[in-house]
Image (cartoon, rainbow, N blue to C red; front, side):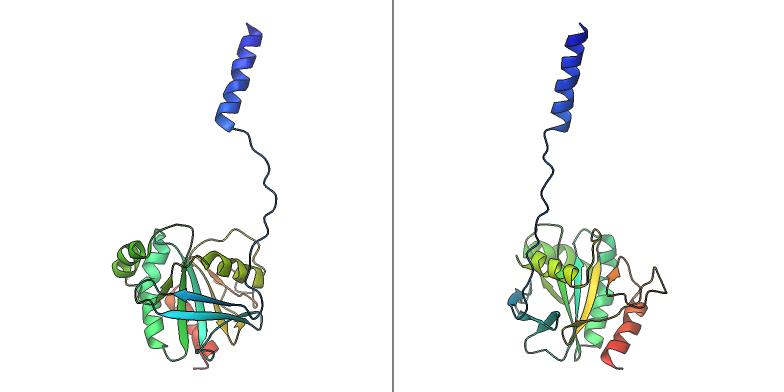
Length: 199
């Protein structure tokens, strides 16, 4: 009887835990220096060509502009809340600044993003749902040597192909912070942008 219960226990463990193999460390595919990637806005169809330069990215035809890459998902409450504020920043600094929002952590259609994020929350800036989004994100994380699990929203700002120093709201003594993570007040972003754009 004891052997029977031991066998049943063993079978239960296998059923509920399954068999697993420790995954081998997967090498991330990143964008190589001087490589270009085209990204398309989900609503207008406008295209930008991203080019690797100076260890970061520039947008062809807009090389003089600072680029904010915003990594977000449609279901993310902080992403939804900050969308109209990002729109205001894009409009206010349109001559010197571009926002490129990279949808991540979900597989949804362009029309789904339009209906459930852009129009619903006022995200009227460049949003791409490109198959290359993850490649761009992995490149950014490698560039800034970010080794933790990414949380969204997550943003970087690049000017002349170089990652800009941004306010670290969690560690005021960090003077070499290259990203925003989580909900960031628009006045913090605005102050950083003024320094980056030379206002």
